[in-house]
Image (tube, rainbow, N blue to C red; front, side):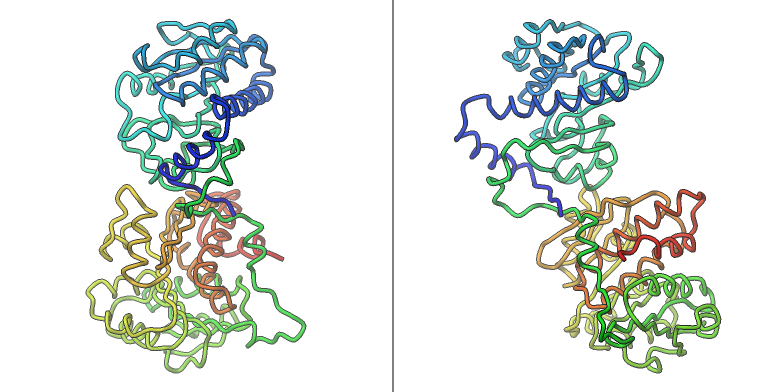
Length: 482
């Protein structure tokens, strides 16, 4: 499990660490890590460091200082390093600039004609609001830069891409798009959530000794494959189909039969030993998936350890009755799609308040807005607010899916892919999530695990593009832990 911290907590940790070190030590560590990664990229992409052209975009403050000191190290290895300031001369890091000049670097007045590697040191984690000119103009000009061979230069960002909102992952204006971001001490939220995350490219974390001083709770955690493998419920020698968990699916309708099939496919890829289906297309489900036990309603379905409700269910009187029956059951429930729509008018608020068993809500951003919690520029904050209001775990779907809990914890999923932006993939996710809950995982871990594996399956399906929800469901079987 990795974690990202807010700016205030990073600053506090840095101040505590710096009080124990000689002046300049932290910047020297950061610059050394940055220079090492830049040198590695120059060798990998441009066949060496010596003679390569490196452009530093340098703003005010320590972020620019990191770039300048790293540039000096590269210049000593034979790179042709130039620094272009985006801030008034008196605000540029003086000692770093002197070090660059002493190593043979230059300070031109304009962008060079060709460049192999660009280092973005314009603004760091202390910046707020969108980039302003001349910095924004310079970032836009990067698109026109080329290497001597005519290719696109490699872009490395210092700590975070300039122009992103560090604590939320929002991108309020022009921002740098990196191939690699070298971040120091810990991850920051903009590197793992929101529209800023894809701009960071590959993220490399440089250890500068900050870890022991990060004493606040992280803003958001990032699940890894080892976490998912460790959480995945596995049968024991004495297990049977009931003890492995029974999941019920109140999904699909005559108008949307595919939603039933896709949610069942997701559930069958999960860890439970028994899948029950309750709904209008019971005959179709039974014909397609013989292991599934079917009924025409929730009341006739029999006992389950968790319910999934809403995928393609519709919003008519029959659908409303089925949702009420699910909410009345004393087991965890996963509410998706049409079930969320039927919650909007508040007519089921009493049932929700009366529940003691866990609830998982799986909205996308538009559904979140209808529920009264528009994501805006802070998807983690919006998911946490909805989780608190509803006393439910919230899985906010998107490229970087967010999972939030009522007690204020949040996760960002790192496996998302645009390939999942197609009809029916959410049904597959809901079925898998319900199976994990019925199989014994806590709702928060089940949501994190389902999002992670769903993303992996989407990536695999996209290799045979165009991917459909049925492709994602098939690939789930290949990505679940063994």
